[in-house]
Image (cartoon, rainbow, N blue to C red; front, side, top):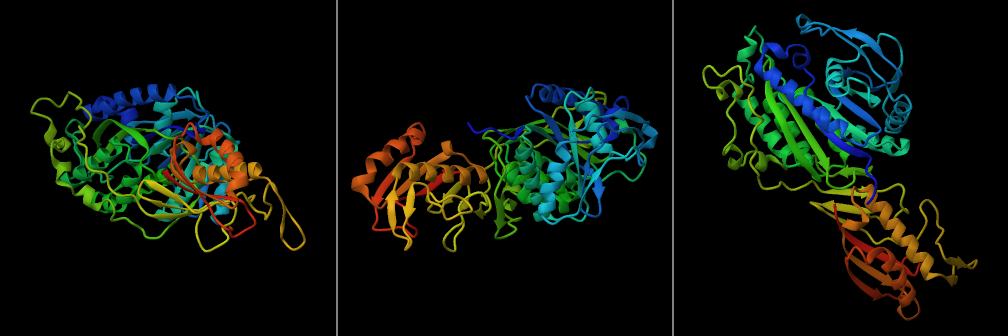
Length: 475
């Protein structure tokens, strides 16, 4: 199976209360205890690094990348300084930072590598690192959250992160540090009586967690704008868009919710996503519509309200405040449709007409007809032409192998893979002379896959090639 650039994904709350104030509240203590399980699951991963995106590391102009090999400082939160200080010293994967910055540069954004003593690492990243990676078992990488970015930009920054991982040869554990709802109590509270600041925030939090528990990352990203607006989502849920871009805008995950508790009114959760297909860098996805309403019907499905836990303030019976509450129970719902995208792949041969390399509709990928031409050139493997462009020699074996490789490139860039092919149409210009050799080469790759196939003879193809594939695959 194709190698994945992402081993596992975690979404965590980075509130300092969880690290420093767990003895003050059963809810904060519950999250700290659950963090221990998250840490154990992270340590079981076979990864090279941890890639952090924290909604608390804000940048105004472009994006910043941590490049100090061993940043050390004592952190004091400006809002929660009464909780105490957090001394830290982290190991940073300084070789990865330039890769990521270069990929973001290509998108036209300002970038800067941060490497000077005393530059403050944000609370969210500090808390997550101290609880997940206290001994620096894995080097870390950190990228800032631009406070003025919108959905498409965040998706593209995630997309760039995936390409940086591939270029650097890294396999990462990805950690998004973000609350769900982020509305805090504006007055002093008894921490033992903490609760989500409003019932509406809690309702939306539970809906988001329900989707994540089913591994439906793409569906969560589609409804993030509605959820952020209705429930004061942490930084407008920009982090969810970044994560969705990096992971390929799919629902191919197995989800698990460890815990969900109030932290001074905000919604703090710990979630894990395990890829069910390899995560690979995507081609640029040109969205034809924002599609933010796509998951609206799902989120308002009355089934979501059946058996959902009550808001934290009401969930504890009298006298039971000292007992941590369990993580929410989730209820399956009908999957929402996935956005429609056309996909262009720079690493594949340029189309000879006005069409994309592929198009995604729901959970299916439809590839345009693809021939054996080499990417970036007019060279056709196995074909020699005279000065007038007439075919002198044609090697069907070389052409078939090249077509198969072009299909592989497009599928991988689209977030799919060869073993997810469902159906193939093959066009040959000389069935009598080429079929047997073509069929032999074809079987080397496709016999184990078992995709259906139709092979037809055509008089000619748009370029002087002898074979072309048209493919349908699962996204």
